[in-house]
Length: 379
Ligand SMILES: Cc1cc2nc3c(=O)[nH]c(=O)nc-3n(C[C@H](O)[C@H](O)[C@H](O)COP(=O)(O)OP(=O)(O)OC[C@H]3O[C@@H](n4cnc5c(N)ncnc54)[C@H](O)[C@@H]3O)c2cc1C
Image (cartoon, rainbow, N blue to C red; front, top):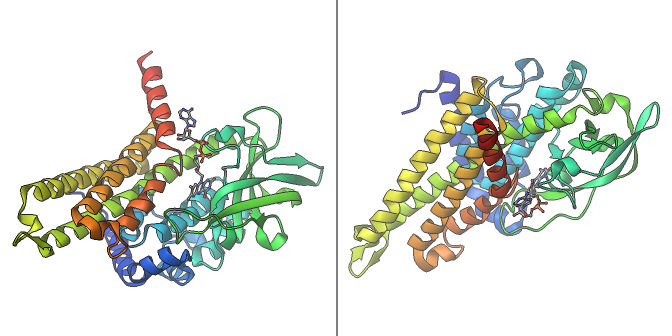
């Protein structure tokens, strides 16, 4: 049993209802058509969750990582790819602005992002630099009264729909000379490339951000020039914990679907749920989902209490997506041929979850972070 504040319970219940009414019914269609559920996204603004961690003075809910994780879980059960777009907006863009930008920048950008009038994204990855994020080559050169920006960002969730982009760029020759800019589509700060077609997360638009001799005035710089390496690493922690929430939602949905199917499907004159091999699958799925939930809530709670650190987020980010992929594959197996077809949502859930083993840092990168910390601590 986990104990939530009244606000956390309320937000979780609200999001459960919203997800079942607004996301679940069209999840399959948006996956098949590769379309973004813009209507539901705008309604998330009315629901009050687009600024889940932002200060109330800017219209935010003023809540923490645990609350954000609960939203991801509930939305993730219904439509993981809409949830990925929600995460890119509310955590990668809104929360990063909340955590790092000046009061003037927050007043300028947050209110419209939080109502859903504006959509946001975050640009870190580049065509040649993914795991090696500190190697990024997008350059912002100081030209006195403005920066001149050149380069591109790859794999950017919400790129084509974004009004605001929170973007990292190199402002010096040293590895750590990385700065952050809040860029605006209305100022022609970026253009977008062709949409990227993917195996999963297909209702979440993914694209490129392109900067070609773009003039960016100095008020778009976040914090001090060359100061963003630390911010980037900090920002990734909440991103990794909350993306694990999507995997928890997927695992729970796969379990629910599987229990229902095991009671409905008969073979050899009995429901398949009466066979011990199916029972073993269900029992393990349920146990693993419970472990995921406890680990995730505990990590998110500790994060809110100030118990942070890259290895804390890396462990949950390594464990949950991997477990959810296994659970989703078991769910497909349990459904037999129907599980492999689009008749049932479990194959979509497996395809969607696979992204969580790659985005926000791959499993291998999580292993590097965890091992590095272990070995350093032991010295
Ligand atoms: C659908 C989707 C949405 C995304 N959304 C965003 C977004 O909104 N914003 C953003 O900035 N980025 C986003 N990304 C990018 C994502 O974060 C990167 O894909 C991820 O960090 C991996 O980088 P890469 O794809 O370049 O793989 P690479 O870094 O090229 O890795 C290739 C393989 O090599 C392994 N590898 C790399 N280095 C090492 C090492 N040192 N040791 C062992 N193995 C290693 C990796 O684990 C992987 O298996 C998104 C990606 C996808 C697919």
